[in-house]
Image (cartoon, rainbow, N blue to C red; front, side):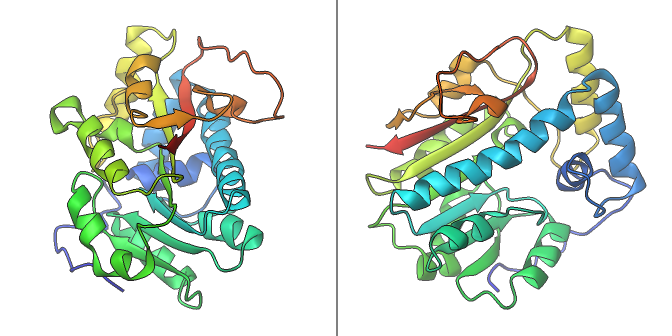
Length: 269
């Protein structure tokens, strides 16, 4: 496996992990008491967090199935989180067995679990890297060996950009990654959205995530999230609440009041 060993990336069960909190929301067992405590703090003030995190998993399945159906055979999932049901490689390789998948994460527990899961899957691997260093991802030997950037790629940034503060220029990070993608590639994004919640609720959610190694969570407006899709053409139904993205392929009038994740898929021009 690629990626240098980073001694600062160690598993500390006393510090909540975003990936393990997400695993807890999804009903998984790869989490510690500190993760459950932080996640319970979020659920206490935002009870629909279980609904939209699970809808985010359905988005992944729908989007990957759509991309595979349009001929995409290589996928990069950055901030992939702990393996669960309907991972990118499972969805993609069910639709097209020759699909190649790269998972990228910097959480050591994710790397440990993913590498064990993928040991017998030659078309799929995991790379230790950080979204905030896009050049390191693009230049990683595993990525360069498995991904042909001259052909369409499905790039997934699900529930990760809201951990990148404005001062770290998330739009520039996305732009750099998008610039590496051939026309006909797809960019899939879901992003935290405060909706009509009160400032007190937002503060409590941000406090819970502020205890994690990922730092604060930054909800953004629909306009802010739309800006990440610059250079792409949004496919239908556009930017909507995550549960509404192609839930039935019918007309969508997404209720933008509840907090949750906004989601969209852009085709690279």
